[in-house]
Image 1 (tube, rainbow, N blue to C red):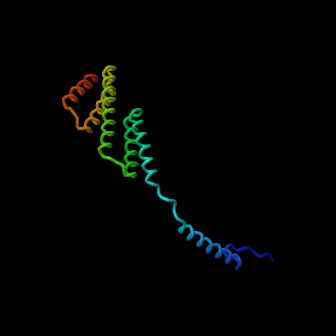
Image 2: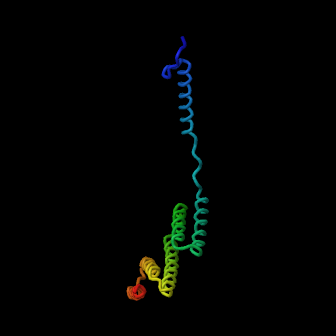
Image 3: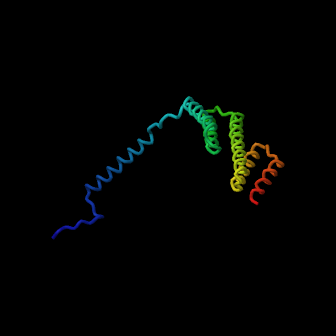
Length: 156
């Protein structure tokens, strides 16, 4: 008669091998926790990252739109904070420049949409202009009312 293999029944040798394997695994895991972690990023590397992100910010302000420039502004701020070289006044100035560029672009968009008698685009550009100019606390209600009247006239 043939002996049948039972999956739960294992030999003494197999039990010893499994126990030895678990013991060795425990030794390896505990040894890994004692290995020193890689050294932290140096102050020089943090400053280099901050200066690189400042360069990217300036380039983005020239080439990219509002949201791209805002993202690079926030990346620069984060890197400058990490490096310990962040200046709030410098941040505020770059933010102001980004918003002013967006205001100019929104006005150009608005004027082009009005010239083309495109009500939808003019309305969108006017909203964008209003949001950006309010952020800089330079909102002029009279000018906005005039521009809105122009947009409303386009609809009719």
